[in-house]
Length: 287
Image 1 (cartoon, rainbow, N blue to C red):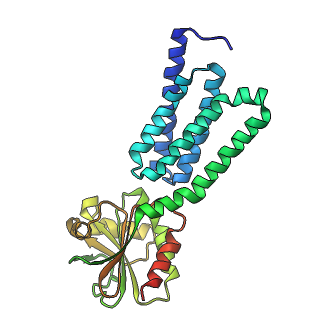
Image 2 (cartoon, rainbow, N blue to C red):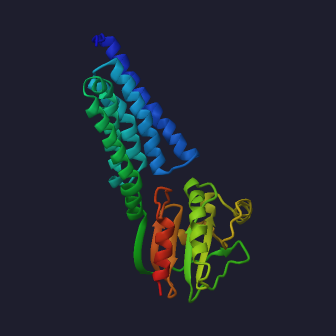
C-alpha cells in the first residue's frame, strides 16, 4: 500500500472522525425517534463502524485514524448512558472497528484467522445483547425496598381510579405523554396487568403530571388514542413523584397492602427483556 502524504493522512483522519460522528448521530436519532432498545443501538452502530473501518483499512494503515473513528461513538455513548457497567458496549465497538480495519489484509493472508475474528465478534455481541446488557439494565433500574411510603395525593383522571387502595397492592407508574421510553413501557405494563387480572387485590395506576407538560385532559385524550385501559391519575406539580424520591420518568413504584414501598423501577429500555416477568413475580411474592 502506497503511503499517503501528510496532507492526505490528515484528510483521512478528519474523514474518520467525521464518519464516527455521523454514524453515532444517525444511531442517536434512531434511538430518539424509532427505538431506544440498547441491543438495536449497539447492533446498528456496530455495522456502521465495521463498514467505516473496512473503508479506512483499504485507504491507510494509520492507527491514529482508527482512534479518531472510535472517539465520537465511545464518548457519545458514555455521555448518554450513565450506567458504567454498560460501557462494555464501547469495548465491543472498539473491537469491531479494529477488526474491520485489518479484515481485508487478514482475509488475503490468514483467511481462517479472519473468519475466527468475525465469529468471536458475533459471539461476543450476542452475549452482550441477550445476556449481559438485559441483566445490567435490570440491576440498574430495579430496587427492592421496604420503606414507609410518603404522604401523596393523586387526582382522578379516569372513573376507575380508586383512591382508597387500603389493603391492596398498588402499582404506580409515573408517566409522561411525550416520553418515548414511557410509551415503550406501556405494552409491557399492560401485559403484566393482564397476567395479574385474576388478582383483585392488585391495582395498577398510570400517573401523569404537569411537570411533564401534561394536563388531565391531554392525558385522558392520549389514553383514548392509545386504548389504555389502566386507571389514570394526575400528580399536580409532581409532588408525589418528588416525595417518593424519584428522578425521572418512567418511574414505577410498588406499595404493599400495608402501604410500604417495596419496589421501584426507574427508567425503561426494551432490552430489559424480563421486565414484565420480574415485575409479575415480585408482585405475586407480596403475600
